Image (cartoon, rainbow, N blue to C red; front, side):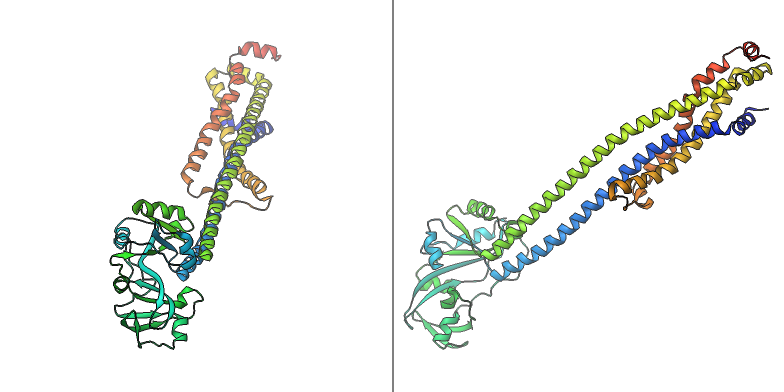
Length: 437
């Protein structure tokens, strides 16, 4: 009779002992696989939570960006570059300055790699009496926007005023009964009315706009401007300090002011929301990281205890089995079976125990891990699918399962080694005499 037949006859004769050994190995394997499933599920759910929060934040940011952008465009130019010696109290009160700076400043800005503003518009502004009508007005000389050579072209916020034409504010054209295409005289020069603005409810209603070059000639300010209007880029919304740093670093003889409280408030809100969203993501990452570390520590202790207990039980079962079979060992030895053959019988049975226990433990571990994860993560209601579990890590799971199938027979054999060796080393004559044969 060969060893293989003896192994299966032994299993059939001592079914309970064999079944208990298989269960012990399966429990040990299930503890390892179940812990791995829970931790993998944690990583999957963490990714889903962070992705959901990221998508929600991105959606919110897009809505806020659109809101701010609409406010900024509706407001128009919201950054004003003024001469450094301009009194801001006078500028805020009258919305025009009494100090001037070289017109080439706007070219210097446009030709630089400045990133915080765009839509650069030089202007010359002065409050004066329109002698032909005896009306106090604000005269603004402007030209087309100066393009930034380092940025893509954008549609101008306002259309340039052509040479020889004039744009009239609401209150002036209403009270003076002026209409488009009519000719008016300003400071002794004739202009054709290009456009009459609607009511705006601010100083624009008493403003006249003409070409910058003509304004410089008429006011004797050739090559001079009083302000550069600009629009903040998204990278600098509600961050006037950043705008000042860039512009004043390039034009040290200037100062920068920001206007448009509604748009600025929305930009500040957007900035705060973005900061809070980033902080919330970091808090969630930290929370999930701490939770995973806690689960890893618990799993490591639990798995070690379970494996040690199972190894002890498997060894105890093997010892009990061998001890109860001393007479059989003596008979086999007296029939000519060598010690190595009998040792191979015990260890083959132990290896088969390991293989079956490993396979069963993998199945039980996956099922228990999914159930355990559902309890830990979703109060018993949320689980993780097998496809989610293996997604992106199929090879690593296969390596784990193959390793288990290889290791568990060795595990069972090692646990059974000492009692098996002790049994086969005994003299068969002593065994048979002791057992009363």
